[in-house]
Figure 1 (spheres, helix red, strand yellow):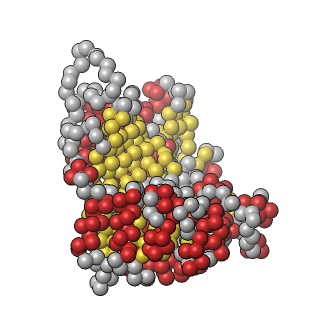
Figure 2 (cartoon, rainbow, N blue to C red):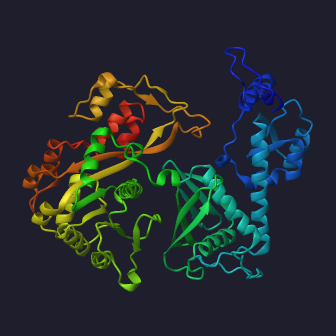
Figure 3 (cartoon, rainbow, N blue to C red):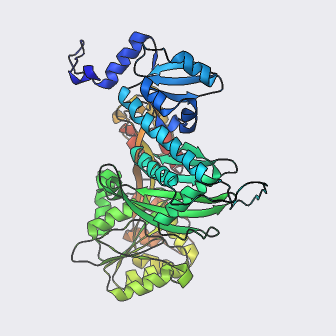
Length: 541
């Protein structure tokens, strides 16, 4: 670290060396493996059992992996090994040393031991006996004392959990109760990663703490609940979290969806729209009245697309109102209402009430039944621009779905402006991606058959893995889109008994690019891989 401060330069190109490069050089000199510590792969509980925090700090070491036979210990001083024999004797395992960045060792020593200390304190303050399991086990001689949501240890664990999730770019936090150990998992770039295991009693207390902060009913554990929390990340930005609980066999499962302000509202290019689709989408949203639908499975980015679009059209001159279940993100530019089934306030009732509120643009969270669909059609016919979502595989299927619900074809002809289908695919890490020699134009042609794209511009890349992307080869996600616009020719195809195929054929003639083709074009640009696109999109017909 001292060498980094004085600006040591590389002999090869004269570029200054940072702490990371100096540490790698030190590892090579010492003949040891270099390790970039990934906190998601470290079991903090086992770390704290191997040695005390004071011992780790004194020797500037940190256990990063514990197996039945060995302990992997990270050190920043590889030539000092007088502590090895003592750790081997105490842990009854062999010690394998690796070299890591001193700043990381210092940081994670504080974090891991503090977490383990908080969990131990929480266990100590209550028996940790789970009371909501469907498998009731009577154990004699155990106290019935329960952990309190306001217990200091529990408060610290929850604070650490949020901080940790923000640092790791997590989109969701899952708290999952199990029979023996509760599991905490983070969703990062669409993939779940296990983070930590806690005893059932501590898991119940953590869930109670989060419910308390989210103004949910802490006592009610038999029915699902929704809540929200607003907090700040280390950078000082406000972050909103949506909470959802679900009763399971071993207690309440809690999922926290994190809405990062950096991803909450984006322009069309940042969302992943191609110039071709961006121009067509802009024309659609400028129309004075009609229905625009966004379709796709859960977690495909529909909410982000809708909110980004609504923010563009929500000027001082128009009244934009939404009816949602639940309200995903609080936005000061919108008038947002939440459905309340217990009060018989449904989507249809909400739209009926909104119609009397002099709206210009209405956003309906989801069209689930005929009544809501009829209200959306009614709103569009009376001069309002209506946005909504449907759960269908592609854009043409949205129209057949509405007709299956019972909406007449002539009303769809009169109101539907366009349908946007979307998916999210992981994007390649820009720091480590490399050209893919195996990615031939023949493979691309096979994937998009019968379509053709200019293979002269095909630049396939493959994931490699580096520190920035947690060795996955991917960092972040982007949207791929299929935009159907309703032309006069398309209206002629919409009939009550029509299937998706004629609709798809006409939509393509009008300029729609199927999802897989849109994804393949992104793979050709080197932004993602063909495998990612094929996994995320329906096949071409």
